[in-house]
Image 1 (tube, one colour):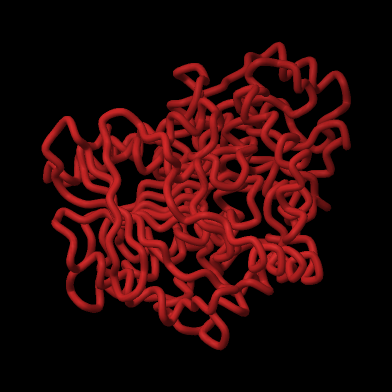
Image 2 (cartoon, one colour):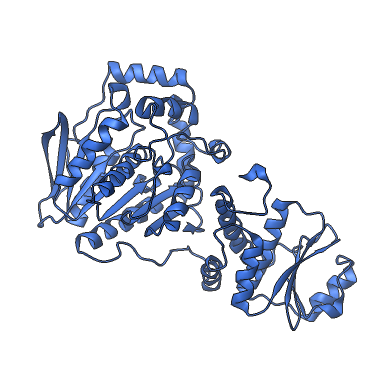
Length: 471
């Protein structure tokens, strides 16, 4: 579910912070990456947790098939269940302080054991084909219920391990993915659109790392989750921000998982960057709280690990209600004709498109008669503009907007509506020429959600009104 809440001040500052830190420098080119890997090889970063621990937890180390494996345990309560945590870092970095703070928080607040395997990194010879089966084996040996969790590259390992455990008929109770890499090919054309706004990741270096990590296994559905059969998977809890180049593939994966009948708790936040749930922002804090609540529910044996009610944001109740109604008119195909058919069924009256030579100052109209509704659009509107107009007018219908006869009279007198007969319309709802009107602002919020969701279905391969270039 896309959340429309305005990003917090801290979240809005995060892109600038990452750029000041040059967070994406070693991803910008293969030359940069190779220089960075030489530095990592010459000066390896520590794998051990920090010396100062959170009060209420303890950490011990063991060995598993040559790997160092850390176990984080709560000391004040009896631990139940196990979380297997796979840290991120682009397959080239060890777990950092942020990861260690997070796993200690999970152990303490969820009263569970957290196992953190120190898997071999790509430049140290680690590969997906080697790492994933060992992670799955660690999951099989853990005390249940088992939750598999990972962020970024660790999210990819977590998802692949879940797929392998499903094959072995020992799936985890829950899989939590924080900004995961779900298509190792990074071939989605939408990535290039997001790239300019992502302050953390860049495709050239990430592709070079993937080549080391996955090699010739990009088509292996166990190692590259986007190709997997998703039926029969356990519940998935997934987080993604729209300023992350991994977001387009996450959207596709979530759609396919839902289509396959998987229970998915998806949180996608506007303007959030990569791995935002681990960052010191209000949005990160809330995401961490949601994850811990889901882990607690799983450990307690609850049938559903997360709430089915999406959190939409700080909008007025009538806008939130319209956003929820909007979900009921979105077809899997992404077709506006099917969307209008669903809306017609809900309203109990037909709704049709009219093409008219409207004045360029008016983008579109929603007209109602005693028997039917009509959306009037400019005759020469492009597919993209047609989508935006229709979504805006559908939003007005979902919001229940209805203007009075004086608006019709003023529009008719203005000459903005050539070809529209005044007697034809009982009401004209929000002609798009006064954008500061509160009803227009509300409609644009709902319309943005509708257009984005339709476009996601286009990218998933539905039969749509878009031209081939959008596929």
